[in-house]
Picture 1 (cartoon, rainbow, N blue to C red):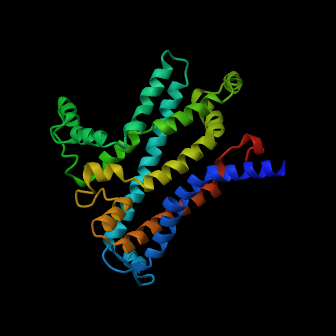
Picture 2: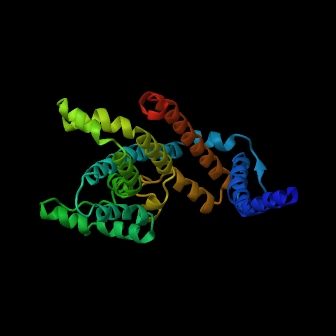
Length: 296
């Protein structure tokens, strides 16, 4: 009996072995090695040379790099509220009993699946070029064509809109949360004379606040690491107006081959993401309602 139990135990460990190999080889080793390289002057063609905090000091004193970090902050804190607000709005509409709701739910989720593909990025470039569909529609209303991809502000808003358009994932989560809100609460509020807006603020938002918190944290982390849109659509231009930190890491690592400098930038980004995540988790006790913990 003991021998059979031992075999089952080792069989379980054997099944976990591929995961451990993948985790150590593709997660843990790159994670640790990037930290080590961040303290070295290292490229792919010479032996790493230890330089201490020089990479970090160079980053923090370089105005162009600080501008990229500022652009990334602007991008993240513009995109997240817009995407979550739009996702909640669509989820609220789909929560009503309307015909074909499953069809519309699927349609609205498609951008989240396709949004990061090269074909969608090419389509997005076509839509926003000078003689593209967007300017053609604006021209019908007497608006002069605008060079979206050639201006700093226009290109930035193009990549923001691309990410906001991919609202399907948080929308599905919001929709599931809305369906879990008890109907009798709305009925009781209606009898007391509460308006739809007051019901939404006082009933809906508190009860779906755990999902708001989850979507906020996951989407904020995702936006700080955004790469596909700026890389495929604008290549970081014009005048580096759409260069985000992840693209800066790529340019330094695989174009300039400065792996040490790129690793230091990546670790600063990691610290920033961890800081905002920690602040979000600390703040949740003030605004997130958990019904199984006496409201908190």
